[in-house]
Length: 337
Image (tube, rainbow, N blue to C red; front, side):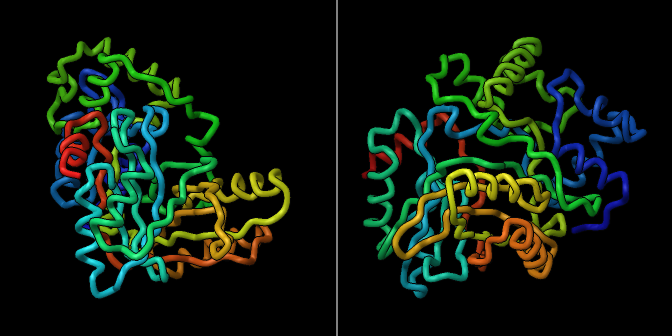
């Protein structure tokens, strides 16, 4: 991470929490830091140029927008891994694709829209056929305990924190109106780093604010905020901790809720098991080192009593981006099938 001062650390923490939809949002963010809006904007631009800030935009909930999505574990010849990953990445709904230290050596997330003529399962079958992967296993979310990356830039040291978005905040999938779809298309774009960034959206500010509030209240929008590049921000390791939770449904749910309270856990899900895959709870852990991740895993194990677990570390990032909702890209991909 390029050298930053304490003000930049506070700024990055604030940007990860919420960027207000205001005529001059930088002024509002600057005031608690003792900065002017122009000073705030200069710092944000510098952090963006340095690659610390990846994007500032609305973060929507895929399921609540009517999309189908899943984590997919794939097995392929390690000698062909890069070529297989390239074919998978051609689908516009693939947002994350990592090589991990496991027999299932490629792990990717995919989302397909309500307009897809293929649907999720058929799309994944086609990806397997096209890529030459020997196996692709769907691991959809059965219950969401937590989602939301918020890196501890300030080194606060608190291991536990508030869960800001979970199953309780989600809404049932419903059809969006044409105006709501246009709102999603506009607000998912990277925010312009200018003094009045919401002025050129095609929406009046009051309508933007009203629709933002409604989307947040319904759970369709999780927040409007910055996403950082983990490694540029000093977080060089990420571990996908997978856990074999036993007992009653209530016991498993309680374990998932306990895991979600750890600040280093950005994502926590209940997923299906298979005869050769007993792991039903998944935790994505971000740390400054693998040792940091292992320490969190050990603490989670002590707290929950779950001893059957393992950590899958990413060895290569093949794709990391945001899903772009309601675009023509998916239809073009499907026309080529």
